[in-house]
Amino acid sequence: MPKDGNFQEIFSRASKNVVKGARAFVELLEKWDGSEEMLEPIHTLEREGDIIRHELVDKLNRTFITPFDREDIYGLSGELDDIIDMIQACSDRMQIFGIKKITDELKSLAVIVEKATILLDNAIEEMNDKKKTVRVLDYLIEVNRLENEGDNVVKKALRELFEKGDNAHALDIFKLKETYEAVEEAIDKCESVAHTIEGIVVKNT
Image (cartoon, rainbow, N blue to C red):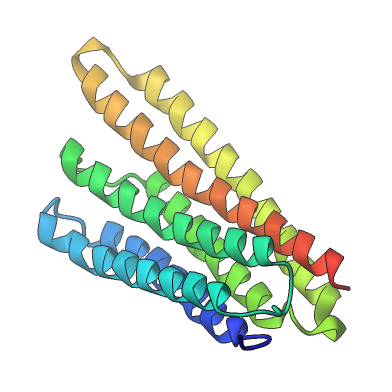
């Protein structure tokens, strides 16, 4: 069996695909018309993420000595794939709900997801360089800060929804609430990936 397969290259492709997915979600909100056709770019990236994940797992099964713990490789690849799965779920939910208006809060949350994925991509690019450990940890701290920022945006958005809403608009309130919380889950998953990377870096420093 081969030793130390080129996992870094696959992880790099995976993280960049996640960034593309987050960016596609931001662009989707900018030109949203509720059509199913608009979802295809994100669906394409989600399928690409699955392909990359399967490639990595296959390489893991055929590699004897890995650059870091096998379970960490497997876990990190799965969590990266989860992010783009959640982004797709958000866009699908919006289309199913028939959401007409994109709120500023929803746009803000999408931008937070994009920023978090860029930071994770930076961390993954440099996580194997022990000279850059401090920089990698700084990226991860910023992801944690963005997660807190996302929580605050969601709390404010939900508070305003329920303060201004009435029974006639209860269904619209429900749709937006579910959508906000779906994007928040994607942000939370970014934080989870940051914790996984932090654990790997600390164990291998």
